Length: 336
Image (cartoon, rainbow, N blue to C red; front, side, top):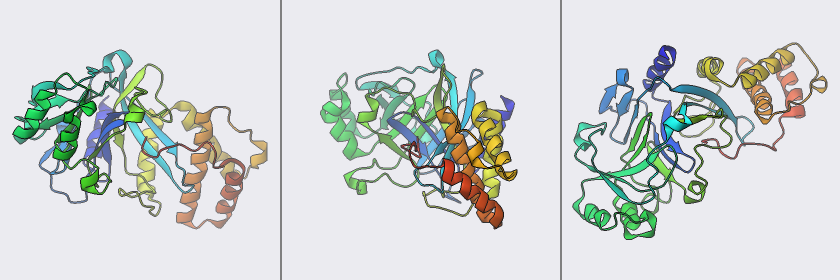
């Protein structure tokens, strides 16, 4: 646990790493810009806030981490993350189904927000409570008229979308707060850059705790996520030159907290390619997790060889990719 806490503290101070609290279909994300002014900076207590949003991670003795890599539909990429998990029975939230007033947000990350009134909008998700916070008298009046109703089937939903209150996503391992506008007509239909939220009703109906692509072991529920700096993707989602330091740092996390079969498969692939083995003599892995590991290992080797201009190794990697890295079975989302 001490090692994990040290990693989280280190990543909190890395502006290019992101954080989120959410379920499959409802999420609050915290991101920063390089040099962005901090309104709260408390690394010891894993807390940080800017004028656009905030994050707080609250570790527990039964918290565990799962580091993972996902396939990208773009063949030169992969995505990565670390899920902070609790046992299923411990992770459960209130699971409210209707708009509910919770009172002043005394746990607000910025002291100035602590008098705002918190409302659970009733998304009925297993491990998160998706809330809004406001001190706006007009919005408060609308919300209080609709207490006990389904938020988006009442006037409250319309009022929320137009008033853009703070969103506060709570779990047993912390909270994400978003102060920016809600993505919609006022933002050109797009979520703003930096901290933002997503609420996707079609996905919420499944009441899943996470994407099926994320390899969370049975019995655990992810309650917060760290999104470490990606070695080939910028914070704005563009391609970037391979960053060896970012790559090596996450591989250390993967060694500590990644699925053993995934880590072992990647090592096998790297060893085989470097040893000039022919891919035709290597059987395709039986499990999806191991097939993802194989493909990501080859993508990572290719990006590394681009950085070192090793033409012979590039040719070997290309041969392996032609054999194994086909476009079917690619993850549906890079941000799952």
